[in-house]
Image (cartoon, rainbow, N blue to C red):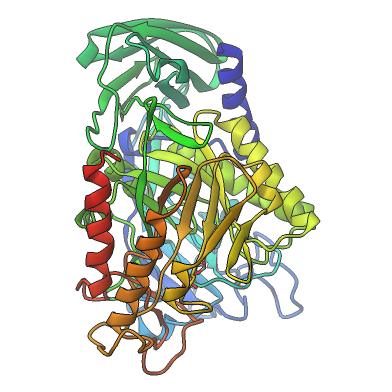
Length: 606
Ligand code: GCU
C-alpha cells in the first residue's frame, strides 16, 4: 500500500509540479497578504507585451508594461503608467468592479508595490489562488513565470536576490480571452469573469519544508472498528530525518522516517470518529520536521462504489445535491471569500442538501474547507466542458495540468468525494480517448475518491438511453437531463423510460427549468414560477420511480447566474434563470418542491 501511496504523491508532483512546486495548505503557512487595491492598465492591443511589429518585447524593453513607469528625467518618454485612479480590488473579477469591464475580454495589467521584511535565509514564494485565464508575472522587471487555467492555484519561487527591502514592483498581466484550444474552450454557459479572482500571498518557508502531504482513512477501514490511517509526506528537498505526526485529540504521535524527499506511512488507531455529512468531525493534524511545522484540520472517512451503490463509511448514501456556480448573484461577481462560501453553502443547507456539485470548475479553497466543517459532500470538476479540442495533445496536457492542480489542492478535504473530469462532451472517438485518459489519470493520482463526468444521453420515443462509452470508465453514471424544459413538457416524465447500459450507481448531475422570479401564470406558462414548480413536481415523481441504483441528484441550480448565452429581453437579460433562489436570495416556488423531496429522503435515512 505504501508504494501505491508514494506513487500517487510522486505523480501528483510530476504532473502539476512541472511548472513550480505548489505549496499546499496555504491557510496554515506563514504568509504575507498582497490583497487590496492594485493599479491597472487596460491593454486590449497587447501594447505592453508586443512591439508595433507584434514582436514580444524583451525584458530590457523600457516600454514593456512590466517595467517601471517612472520617467528617468524630464525628457524621458514613458507611454504607460499606473495610477491610483485606475485601481482594482484583489481578489475579485474585473467585470463586476466597473461597468466598462462587464463584457471585457482581453489583457489587463495589474501592478502593486510592496516592502519586504527581513526573513533571514527563508525561501519566498508568490502564491495565487487563481487568475482567469492566463497570468504572466513579473517582479522588479524580471519574469517569474506564467500560468494558464482560471480556477486553480499556482506559485513561483522568488530568488531572494530579486527582492528589495522597499518598493518591490510586482506586475501581473491577466488575459481572459477565450480560445478553441484552451480549457474551457470558446463556448460556455457562464460569465467569463477575468482578473486576479482569488487571494495573492507571499509565502515564507524554511529552506527545507513539506510541500505537500496526504493523510486519509484507508478504504479497508470503512467498516472495521480499528481505523487504519495512511498517507505520505513530500518535501522540497531530500532529507534524512524523522518527521513527527501528531493527532492530539487521539493522543496519537508517530515518528515517520524520511530518507529522501518523500515518505509513505500507515498506522492504526484504536478508534476515531469518522467524518460524515451528519457528523463532520475534523481532527487537528500536526506535522513537525526539523525545519518546518504544518497543521491542518482533516476529516477521516471512506467513499467508494460497491456494485450499484455509493458507500460513505461503508454505508449506502443518497446524494441530495444541488449545483452551484462560483458566483454571488447580487451584484453578480465571482465568489472568493469564506463569507461567500458560507453564504452559498448555507443556502444549500436550507434546501436540506447533503452534497453540492461545484460547477463547472474548481471553486476557491474556502468552499471545500467550509464544506468540510458544515458537513456537505462535494463534487469538484475541471472545466472540460462541451466542445473541447479533443484531438489536440496539448489540450489534453492542459486538462491534465488543471486536474492535477485541483487534486493537489484539495486531496486532504474529506468533503470532496467526487472528482469530475468534464461535462456534456459530445461523443466521438477522440473525445472518449481524451476523457478516458483523464479518468485514468485521476485514478492514478487519487484512488480514494469516485471519478465521474456528466455523460451524454439520447432519447427516442420517450426512451432515454445512457450508453455513452465514457461510462465504461467512470465509477458512477452521471447524466444531465432536462426532460420537460429542453424538449417536451414536464408531463413527459410520467412515461419516461430509462435504459442505462451500465450496472453502476446512477446520478442525475443536472436537471432544471427557468423561472423569472415573481412572474406568475399557470403551469403551462413558460418562464413562470409555476412552470418551474410543475417541472420539479414531475421530476421528483420520476425520481421516486427510478430503480435501486439511482443514487442521487444535483439539480441545476442553486442561484440564478450570469450567462452571455441567455438573451431573452424579458425573462433572462443575460442571466440563466434556473436558480431555485433569485438574484436577491428569494426562494422561488420550485425550491419547496425539491426541499420536500429531500426532507422525505432524509427521513428514509438516505
Ligand atoms: C447544461 C450545462 C450547464 C448549463 C445548463 C443549462 O447541462 O451543463 O452548464 O448552464 O445545461 O442549459 O442551463
